[in-house]
Length: 417
Image 1 (spheres, rainbow, N blue to C red):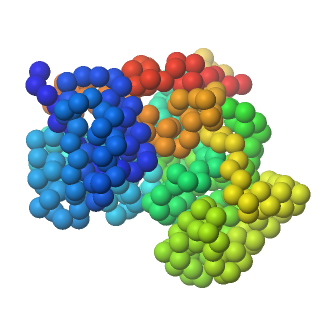
Image 2 (image 1 turned 90 degrees about the vertical axis):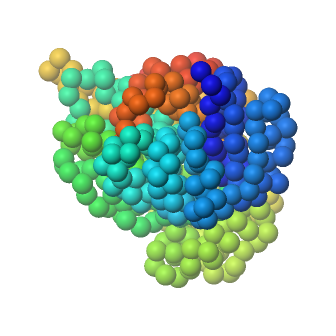
Image 3 (image 1 turned 180 degrees about the vertical axis):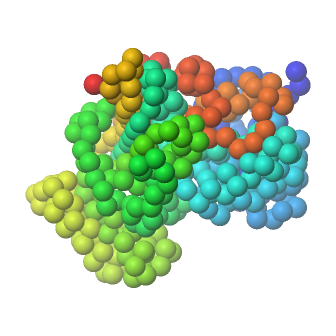
């Protein structure tokens, strides 16, 4: 077998960088072509990879000629540049034209729907396009499929994600995504069919792993309820709930997100404000007004007390970074041997000293690296079309791939009661 040329677009981003580093751990005969609009940021990454295996170059993915040249002949193209609402379309189209496999860790509904609209074109081109191959969506889909396999019928699938304090490691694309999922329309699957809710309005409490304990979660716009019904069309409800840790962060992002939704701040103003806030550079008075509105809602809902909110504000104001806690969980309800049953999976550990869920970049990048291995292990021509993780990746193969990229088995998942 010859050398496989694997193309990364947006390679300098924190999550994509982690995916590259952890993919390299698995070894293999590959050539990594790293592209970014800021190639100077890739020098240290190229240096730490095996000698002669990686190259770095500048790419403006919106320049079709540059993009076509970059993806030509690739064994796999990995898109790590966001926001996916802007970047996925051009790269998917270039991969279709070049007839090369595509993989991303997109986490918004818009790019997911666009990808799904390309199913027939991908089949005709003989190209596999793997979407949502991160932590959530991605690993959550795999946990859901694994849990569902223990049941005879599936009625409800509930997915949960919590992201911890990420100050210093959050890019503008991530902030853009968070604002969109914290306020605005939320496509979901309810009573056996598609439904439209409002993000962050419906809440529920669930016991999360990784030391998070009983946590209030908020229904959020995410791709899982859009893709999973293709695999489980008879399910009654498929929902995704998310949250930030510590709890007052939910008020911050909800307050600013509502301001954007209602036209009181532009998306750029909101991202500028949050970026300044997270780097302790202050922020606009208008932005703080919306933050305090969001914090009041956190107290009214019972998610946090005023004492907790005041302590959070005081610590955040002096640049304190809260201990990182991230968690993923799924619960699948249905029938087994004619009796009602609930099967669940969740991540058992998180934070400093762990490998898989040390932070959001680790969770997403490690998951992406594992999905890459599974995709590259597929014989050429095995499949063509657009696929969410539950449609093509066997759970045990994903777990094994996570181990191949360095994840201790005991960190991958636990069965929760």
